[in-house]
Amino acid sequence: MSHAGHFVHCVDSPKFKPDNLIEDSERLKKANELLLKDDLYNASRVIFDLAEVDQYTYHAMVSVKLAQVQHIVELGDEKGLHDWYHNEDGTSKGHPSKADIDAYVSIFAPGTLTSSALKNFSTNAKKDSLRAEVAENLLSKRFIHPSRETTLTIPKVKKSAPQNPYFDFWAWSCRALQWCGPSPSAERRTGSHHVLPIFMHHFGCATPSHESLEILRLLSNGRTVADIGSGNGYWAYMLRRYGLTVNPVDNMQSEWRVNWVDDTVISDGVQWLKKHKNGKDMVLLLVYPVVGGSIGGGSEGGFTRDLVKAYQGDTIAVVGTQNHNGYTGFKKWTMSEYMANEHKDWTKVVQIPLPSFGGKDEALFVFQRGDRAPK
Image (cartoon, rainbow, N blue to C red):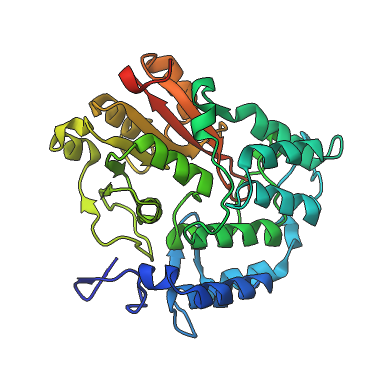
């Protein structure tokens, strides 16, 4: 975040400015052309103005350099690196076809109607295929409150949506790593892929879709979004591109190579809410809330529990896991299960799947209470 005592958006690349990137269609096009060649290294260099020989070490689940990850990408499926789907006995269920991977990616593209694309993804799946399993998983979890179906069905974009480079890199990863979406058999895999630490440092833990950003815009209804635990600010940045006012807040215990916003308030989330009328007139957004209770300290689920308890507004949005891998919020509960069990005064308005990296199953959850809650 900082280098030589001053803020930079990207470590070892003082030239990088998010707005300059987003407004440079040729640069984005060049990066996408490199991704088509599976050249993650140079696509990342183009996007973030990195040096020809990049020496930064990305620390996450593993510690890697960009060149090392490029080498692993070029290894392809050696040593089962692309074996995302497993039978109960641990053997691989094989890989999805390119057509099925493309169909999965298209569900989240701005140019498609997500609900229709998801139905087509299911209808056109071969019986007992990986695609059929993924489709059943996504359809069974997708929820928009019946009273909001009309207003929250996001039409496909006719011209162009704001540029979303994380989506482009995520789409590439699906094709390069042979991933066509989350399913029960994908939950059996332990571990991820070395590409993930790169994405986490460059963009964050979860990929926003056009549908999710539009739903947040509509449900915010002109109110400020308090993005607590905002991380490197990619969601805050994208929401601003969609016209929202966002206050990013983070305790900055983690480090990212790239920071998309330069005005993150370094603070404990509950303390920040207390200084701002407990968020009464704001939307509370939690993107990939930490579980806690292990090496990182705190109590298991404490981060989310304390914020929900402190918040006095009427709209909570959470980006997190919708299976039981325990990556976000709580070890044994999804956010939907937690709210249903512990906060019955809140009504679930939305649970929609998000573009998910290999082995993950992410969603946007939105809950409301009081007069704003659907009846």
